[in-house]
Image 1 (spheres, rainbow, N blue to C red):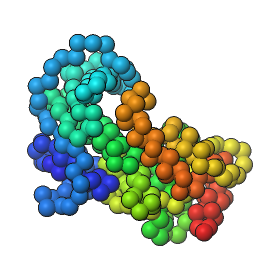
Image 2 (image 1 turned 60 degrees about the vertical axis):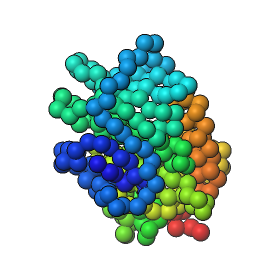
Image 3 (image 1 turned 90 degrees about the vertical axis):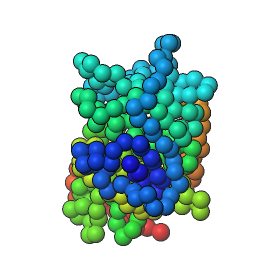
Length: 287
């Protein structure tokens, strides 16, 4: 199975028919002749050695236990659903170009695990190619995009819906995990991804990133321009990364600094109403 995500090719040596059970990947299927840099290869059904040391990081996310081992020659990951009988493991080289996993189809939750492993592989292999995954909702108007950034529950999706309702020609690119890519010519592009949270929006499309809005609920609507350092700091909080992994962290930090240097960012204090959407759109169309 070959996937094209943010202009890169991700190779997964599993039966492409599985994608029929994972509809979020259907728009991203790439043919064997599809052009693009191969970001990483994921081999499934591998025999992996047991980790004999305590993990460096343990996280509990959405009913799953994620453990991470950071070693000089590799990164190890294990994933287990709470009350689940199966433990799934992954091991990657330090550049995340070649990934092995003991994942096999047919076990309970196995498709969810494959989805998570593909996302993890993309995040950390893309980190070395000036590309990051951010927690945001993204809208495109006339070929240019913006991202509403912030933690869950802050109103990102609501503000996107307001744009779709009140801004002519607006369409939703992604509602949870769009991709930002700093291009060789100095532009920043925003891409749809196979990961869009609770909203089934899986657009294999891109736009030039014009504005970043960092969301804050408030009793009135106000836009506050941010300088590059502030944009960098706020993007760092919203970006998927392993904070204790200095290797990938350095690459991601460099990319975020480049993005913060060329894309205008604003703190958007807002109420969930038409006036807030019109206010943010006003600066979107400014030169």
